[in-house]
Image 1 (cartoon, helix red, strand yellow):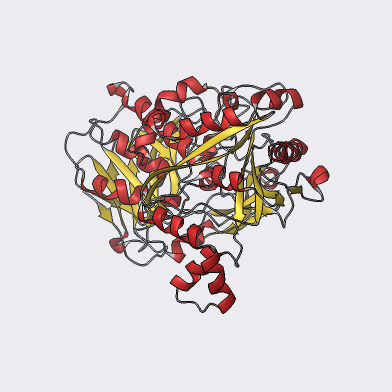
Image 2 (cartoon, helix red, strand yellow; image 1 turned 30 degrees about the vertical axis):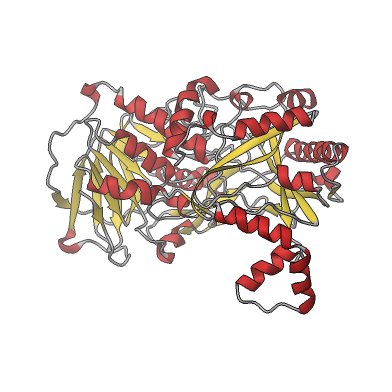
Length: 563
């Protein structure tokens, strides 16, 4: 039942000025980790599903161009780290998985706008299910990370920080699960799910508290109209915001923003190198990515304790050591020789000197394991939760993409609390690692003033969070605890944009858990409110309207959104 468009992209009318009509129960827009997790969870439950994806099976520069936008706040690469393709960002992701902490869900007196409308316990069973969806073949509670954590904790009595573990499910060396590869073909063959690739969402049609239809434009300019009982936007953190901001300008879309909260509370995970210095051998063995050729592996790092967060009035944070290899090391010389590079006589001598290390690493490779690092210099890389700030936001620029939609303008802010958290986390890591002889790190010169969050030290995380955050009160967010758009009966928003706060953990694992929770919610909807279709309907043709251009608001409203 798959439908994969491959024609060249354009914005002209379809042949014969007709529009194809698709009827389904649930229309999911976006085929990344969020959308495909939801689709595979709903597939076969008695509902007809339509998955709409703007990209095709391969990354296409023309499709990627729709991500163009501008940054007017803290520097960030707006188009980067986003992929309009089957599988979305999982085509390129690093596979890093971890749960959010219990405290991340709770209101914190020292952090305005914190607190989720659900608790960690509400998501806990979906986290367990997410393990297998993310490619892990063994439950986390049965893997070998827990014994390593216990051993580390018994040996090193850390204060204000604790050991933390991230897990990875490798498909090949440094390659992790691609949702398109795992779920896309299966869904395309399903009689219950229709996959439509190469068709971009351009408009919603609705009114009286409901969305009636979604309109999409194919790569050849032909249009589709998808009628459904439920619509789910799962287009990525920035794109969810951009699309809804465009639709809120169109009075025929059914989308409204009466409290002007759409796009606000935008966050990322600020990531920076905040200290560096020589590590010990014990540190190299403890804090490294225990990479494998295939299967589960994990990485141990450090995280700020809940007690320290509360006492100091700080946010959540984590840190890892990354090692800069010594080009004179025998193992590094051996790798260069294996690649066919020329080596000098003194470098051959280094290989002889480090023969034992080379033999040990070759044995690990033969067992499908990565080498243990040995480095003269380690960098401390800190990942931070951000304080939710309504003035940190996604807006619309005055420029339009080729489909007529306004592009994104991002005003990303970094707060004093963010910088104070980075500085404290760095100081504590330096102190504790030095105390136990694990590393002798030196902080960035401007740590106390900037937290080390400066242009030269910061790294892109591509974790675009917030903007359509969950909230109980529609004056404080865009969607409710079930991810339903406030004021609309049948529009849901799924992805990083849904998170009220981000913790420090990579967001994909939590997004997958939220998708599984949403699937259960949609399955539980009363049958009378769903449009269950027993057999596939043939496409219906109707006259095609021109490709829409979002209507401009009054000058005051327009300037408020694009400033």
